[in-house]
Length: 260
Image 1 (cartoon, rainbow, N blue to C red):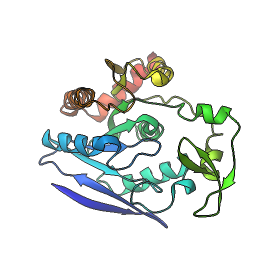
Image 2: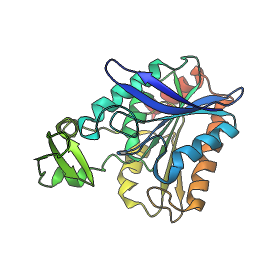
Image 3: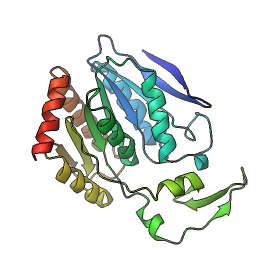
Image 4: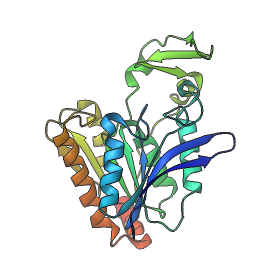
């Protein structure tokens, strides 16, 4: 069953779509990338949520503020507001549900935050094309500041987007690779070299992580064969860990990480 859902924050509303599975083995929370939304590129968000529901996992895909149909404009958002948004969503979910997090591209920031902030509630993490350096070139380059035409606020046009001052300021916050105590799967394309440093950093810091390289795939898995491989690999991982996942398992992964 699919239904539209909304999450009320202090002064904003987020919108999304929930895919309910009967007797669900777990609940998947998708964290989209830099300018992604509840459908995401090539509708990969829709297709994966439906795939997950058919295989016994409920799933939620939603729009951050400034994305899709949720409140606010993109140039008024930042990494900080994304964390606030995910906390808002989490506050409306059943805390007893086994929670699995997927972070796509820049979504690794929020997925990593959830893994570290909620080590017992989050039972597993999957990262697709994880990228901590998507704005590296923009940070190194001279930033052009101008007033956007719609809101007449200071912003910087980069990567086809208008980045407002909140986002530019958040880029100054050091971005550290997260320590993920839960089972961790990293999926990336062999033809996507921009993610290689992030993948290596994640593997160095999380010795228990599994990594799967999709031959020839690009950053967004635009070929149906690549997308199908990503879905199959992800579902295999989730099914493997869902039936036996427990807080004790998570504690074991944490200890292994500390030992390594």
